[in-house]
Amino acid sequence: MPSAANGKVIDKIVFVKNKIKIIFNNADDLLISKETYAQFFLYPNKVLSNQEFCELIAYENINESRKYAFKIASNRLYSKKQMKDKLLKRGLFDHEVEQIIKELQESNLLSDQEYLEETIRESKLKRYGSKRIQQRLKEAGIKDDKLVRENYTQDEEIENLNVAFEQAKIIYQNKNFVKQKEAIFRFLKSRGFETEMISQIIEKLNYDHQKEIEILKKEARSLFQTLKVRYNEEELIAILKKKMLARGYRYEDVKEVLEELYGEIY
Image (cartoon, rainbow, N blue to C red):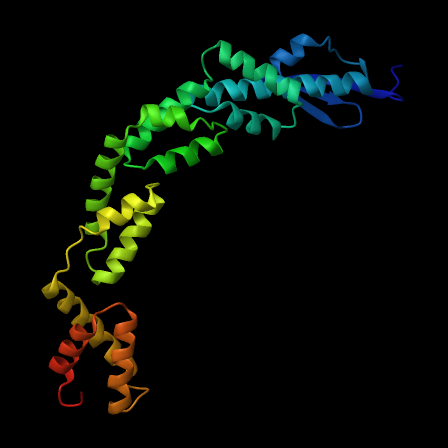
């Protein structure tokens, strides 16, 4: 009679679709791939020592991790660091990960150079600045700023900055002049453009007095309705003026609008 004193006894072997289920006599079972099954000589009543069982588990994990790596690398580009992180999370050792990465590279499915070039191409299309590109590459474990500069010229960055600036003007067109400038600055900063470049292009933003007055009137009316239940008329106008100035409106514009809207109590 087989003994499980120093391991596990196989009770049954069942074929389940593309997997093999190994059922042990203690009611535990293990699902493995056909590749792992072919690698180990398994049959009913065989006793697997603890070492053999651990080797089987390790082989299965490596084999499944290899298939996983080849599958995801076939669907999209990864850097070596990104792939390594994913494989380490599956419980592999460093040397096992390096072996799979080597196989991926030999199959032309993993290349930091190709990842860098594709990241730059994609970033150009999305109108990102060089700092955003460098950050993305740094997170992927690629820190070659020289290659970024070689593949993304200053003229290209200026062109993308101009396009992103026009996009931002449309997005934030309903904000007052000061708030619009602040929002555009944050927008371009998040896109990865240099602060100096952003500051220079924002100076091109023109102040539209008529538009500013229209936005100011709309905000003043809304805020007036909110404040009138809390303050008397004299306090109300003072608070309203203070809040509109705090929102970035010019003093002369605030004075003009409040006199027009609430002249009788201004």
